Length: 195
Picture: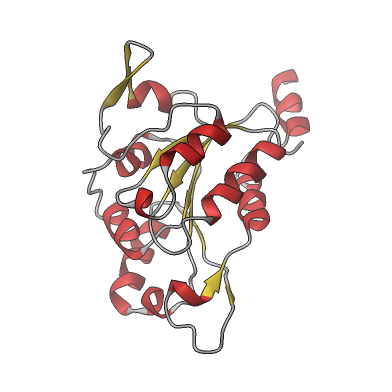
């Protein structure tokens, strides 16, 4: 399994492609990863947190938990959660989330987690869709690239008249593979430990 013994933080963005985060969660688990979930602002309007909690078997972090939350009668800080995270992947990274990340606007738990994390961060979004081609969004994407954030922008148009995210789909398997590419394989990790 390509993500054996890895802990991944799945950030759930909002929009018509939010449901893909469910498939990405399953794909990460099938690849051997342990997955924590943070909901982005308004993500629950598209997929309820309970769906992710049921599949992950973990308490899902709400957008409001910028510094931490109560879990099992104890306060758990967001920084403590991030200490064990190997990579972050956000699906879908809508234009608002991309802009807030680029501006370091940490007014929600997901953006703050990205700023606290020192390892790989992958933002998945339908790059060819019209909103993402706008010059304002392209300016934010340049800032994110400069910060070494991985931008996964591949998507497939489902309908000829597709303009926004409603007519596009992203491959969960390819997103999982992109996460794995950012981390050493179990064999590489074992080799590093022997040195």
